[in-house]
Length: 86
Image 1 (spheres, helix red, strand yellow):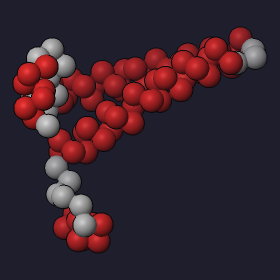
Image 2 (cartoon, one colour; image 1 turned 120 degrees about the horizontal axis):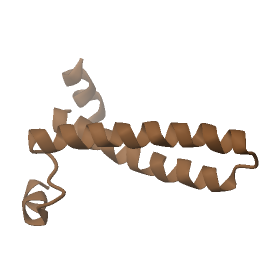
Image 3 (spheres, one colour; image 1 turned 180 degrees about the vertical axis):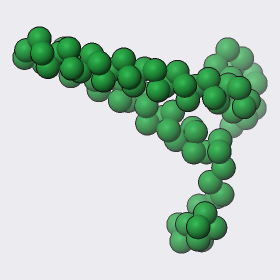
């Protein structure tokens, strides 16, 4: 199926690194969006619900980041090494 999608879209192979990076890049704006929504919420109940979702999203981001660091796909503490990967 992966090769079919690659041919269909003309994209490079979908590696674990590409998929994990895409997930991480999606998680970041979700954190920002939940944070903004909390400041706009009209009731305490809505704010509390959004805070729970925000906490979940932060935890998810941490899991993906940890996976990427462990695999050597992401080097947030070593700028030179991170730039070489891209």
